[in-house]
Structures are given as C-alpha cells and as structure tokens.
Length: 619
Image 1: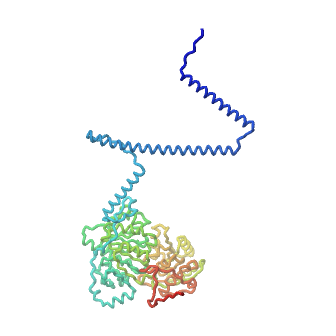
Image 2 (image 1 turned 90 degrees about the vertical axis):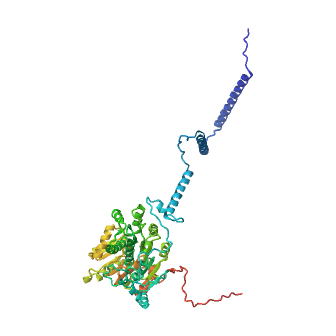
C-alpha cells in the first residue's frame, strides 16, 4: 500500500524554491571568487606598496566621511532636541495658563531650563545698560559717558561731568585800596620788567599783587621773602577771585606758594560759610614722590597756622597710614597713581573737593599720567570746582588737556611760550669725548667742592639708573662723600638720601631725572654727565640751581651722540644770553619745526609787506 504524500500549500512550495535559488547563487559567487583567486595566484599577481598606500588612503577617506556624517547627525539631533524643548516649554506655559485660568491656583514650580548662549549675552548686555543708565541718572549726566575702569572696580567713585559754567567764588577777593591807587605806569612797568603776559577772557582788569601787604587779611608768615615772585603776583588776584587759572613759568619761580596761599584761603572761606563742613576740600597732584613731599611741607606749614590738616599720598610706602590720614584731611597732596588707588577702593572721597591743582602738568603728561589725571578730575564735582594748572612749558598736549576740564581759564605766562632757561644760571657746554667724562667730572668736583667750598651742594645728573650706580661708585672710590638716587630705590632710601643732601650731611648727589623737577633746595652747581633725551629736560635739570632769585651754575657734557639736539640747545643758550661754543655749532643748528600755540603746524610768520605776484602762462 503506497503511502500518500502530505499536501503542501503553494506558499510553502514558493518559499522552498526561493531558498534553493539563494543557495545556488551563493555557491556560484563563491565559485567565481575562488576561480579569481586561483587565476591571480597562477598569474603571480602580488599586492605592491602602491596598492597598500592606496588602500590606506581609501580607509582614511572612509573614516573621515564617517566622522563628518556622525558630526552632522549629532548637530541635527541637538537642533531637534532644542526645538522639542522649546516646543515643550511653550506647551507647559500654555498648560500653566490654562491650569491657572480653570482651577484658579498656580501649578507647582518647575526647574527653569538653562538659558542659551545668545540669551545669556542679551541678558548681560541689558544689565550693563541698566547699570550705565542708573549711574548717569545718579550723577545728573543724561548724555555723559561712564569711565571704562569704573565698571571693573569694586567701589567705583562717583563721576562728574565737564564743567559748563564759571566756578564758584568762595574767598570774595577785593583789591587792596593801596594797590588800586598805584599809577597804571607802575603796574605796566612791573609787567614789562618780568615779561608777564596775562590772557584774561573775563576782562576783570585785576592788578598783580606786588607786595605781601596787598594780600587780603594777610595772616601768613612770609619771613625770608622780600616780595612775591612774578608768577605769584600775577596769579593771586585771579585765583583768589575764584577763576580757573593757568600759570606758565620757569622752574624755581615760586609756583608752590602761588597755589598754596589761595588754597588755604579758599578752605577757610568755605568753613566759615558751612560750619559742619568736613572732608577733603583741596587736592594738589604732582608727577613725582619727591615733588609731592616738598609741596606737602609747604602746605603743612601754612595749613597748621590756619588749623587745617594736610596729607601726602604717594607710592613706595604702605597705604595704611595714608588711608587713616585721608579720613580727617582738608588738603591732599598726591601723585596720580596712588590717589587713583584710593579712589578706586573707596578710601578717598573727593565729592567735597572744590579746589584742584595740577602742578608740573607738562611733566605728568610726559610720564603718561593723562588717563590717571582724567579719572581724578571725574571724581571731583565740576559745578563748584576751581582748577589751577601750573606748567613750565605750554605744548599742544597741555593745551588740549586744559581745554577739556577748565572753564574760561586766565593764562599767565612769564616770558613766552618758547622754552627758556633761567637767565640767572651760568651755562657752560663742554663738547667732550664719551670716555673722558669721569675724569672731567672729578676735576670739576675738586674745583668747586674744596677748601671753604667743601659743603657747597652739587647735583650731578645721569641718564640711566645703572649710570648713577657706576658714577656713585667711581666717586666714592676716589674718597668723595656721595649719595645716589634713582627710581629703582625704595622710597625710604630715596627720602633719606634727599634729606641728607638737603641738610648738608652729604653735599654731593648723583641722580636720574627723578630729581629734575620741583626739588626746592639751594644747589650751587648742576653737572650733566649725560645729556638728557630732550632739551626740555635739560632746562628742568639746570633749573635746580639759581632758584628764588639766586644765581646758579651749570656744566653740561655734550658728545657726538647728542648732536641731533644741538640746534635746540643753541637756541636755549642764545635766548638766555649764554656763550655758544664753536664745537657745538659744528653739529649744526637745525631745529624741528615747532607748532604755533594758536595756529598749529601750518603757521608761517610774515611781515605783511609781501605783495601778490601775477602768474603768466605761455601760449
């Protein structure tokens, strides 16, 4: 009996046929690969070095494509995720609103999502604008700009706008009747004799105070002074009247008293009007520590007589003692850097200051203090501020600075705008070989500091700090009593050296230009071992002698390295009536063109007699 085959569906038959076909095709492919490998082996085909390199490059390209694709995928995923998150936040916000509207109670607080980079930048910008707007409103400056540095400091000082009106007059100056009764010819003779030029935009016709007795309610001790110096006599009427004032005068002309006397009278008048008045009322800014200390000595002497307190603020010493004295001071004498430190930390409150002095303004600009000066000015209220500026020269940089914060200032010039040396100083220029300086210096010191002259003070200037150390060591090895001073020394050592020189304990001082300005001490002789970098600095160096009406001497070594300054030096010597050596003239007298104080670099002086010329063109 034959066994019957089980019935199969059409689907089963089709699947079975497909499987058999796949197996057969696979066998065919395997066979083809085997045949190809066999043919390659038979033909001796080998994979070379070039093929390996190509294969490696291909793998590298595949890898790079794969990485790029993965980066694109990740970027796309991030975008999709952010879009979903924003969509979710919008849905949540709608649900919150609906829930509050329907139920009447808010939903549970949700954790806020981290803001994006763009959102953080926008929020930061908005906060910055808000702070800036609040500061402007607090200062009464709807259109002013805040100082960039004030945003970074922990305790930013209050800033004030550029003054827009005349300063307040607090001292109520009234001209002395005896001064008023003097004939005009006497006043004109005084102005002509001292080459005083007064540029007064107020047309106040104030006469110079030519005698101490003409000062109002004179309670100052001027023992040792016969009469006011030209800069004092000419500026006092205007500063006592409350006007902004610019004084241009040579070094050693008595500028310290020119602003010290009005400052003290100004504060006394304010205290009489405001019984509960406290805080700093006057600020004097100077370029160097030594000059600041010297101004402070003068201020302290006269402020004590008026029962006022003064403090000197400069670098090189600890801040703690200065910080404590600032709290009870009426007058602050400071260098720009240290005063700005105290302003930024909130230790110096200048909101009550109404009398500001910038001494040696040209020197401060030369030393790069312009931004520091502007920050100090911004910290002082302008509507009540009286500003004084004293300078030995009147260059464009100083004029520009004065125009930004002074109100119609009266300018008093002793001499003219050109650089001039003190005519009472005998100037000797020696053209010398670089290697002969030390032996010539030793000969000069023996000539001017021997016998009865052994205690006469001599100040020797060098250009570099290392040069000071070398010259000091050389002179000490020759048995001379000598001290050195330069910027790398500690403030304590600098102060001690200056004190010993001033007191006469050591009559010979070697210094860099740190001692070139403002030091008020009797110096018999100045010697320039190395010529300074500018003729302006030369004038200030020799200005350490011949001060307060006395005569002085200056010797200067000039070498071939300095020949580019020979023209300007010749002009300074001629203007002061000093001899010009032939050896100096050999270097030339060319001078770089100077700008006119009013017309700038394009000014050309003419006598007005030249007539126009008719130009003819050939046919």
